[in-house]
Length: 144
Image 1 (cartoon, rainbow, N blue to C red):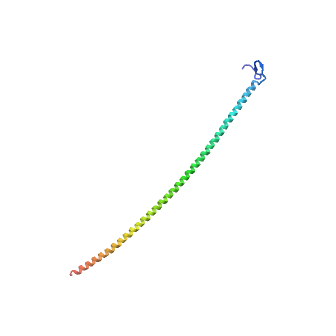
Image 2: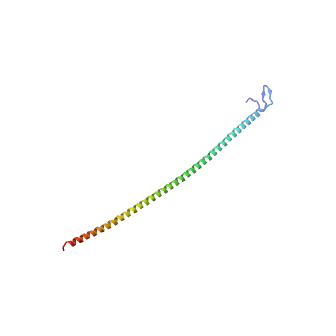
Image 3: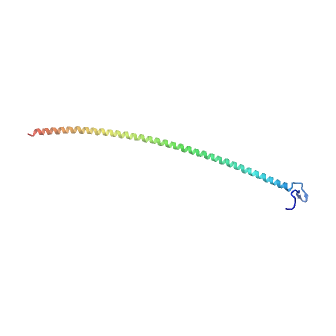
């Protein structure tokens, strides 16, 4: 320290200056530094507030996007299930149709078989009657 009391007025060019004392200047500098700090911290707080709003908005948009995706998945799943059921119905109808056709074919074949059996039985009867007649005729021809 130069030995000058902080309360003493500053000297300029050897004249007594009635301006502020060193302590007052120090206080003014401190006040300006504090104001500057408050201003800076205000700017920083404002930026933080804007950032937190941005983050909140992004989070909200992300939630909205996630909900949209969830709804789309639900809609697509529902549509896929409906298509599967519709296809299953088509296939069941085709199977029913094929079963009916097969039954009709089987019925037709059974009737044909039944007719053939009837024809065979009647022809067999005719043949056996003829055979019996021929045998009887032969038996009568030959002397006892």
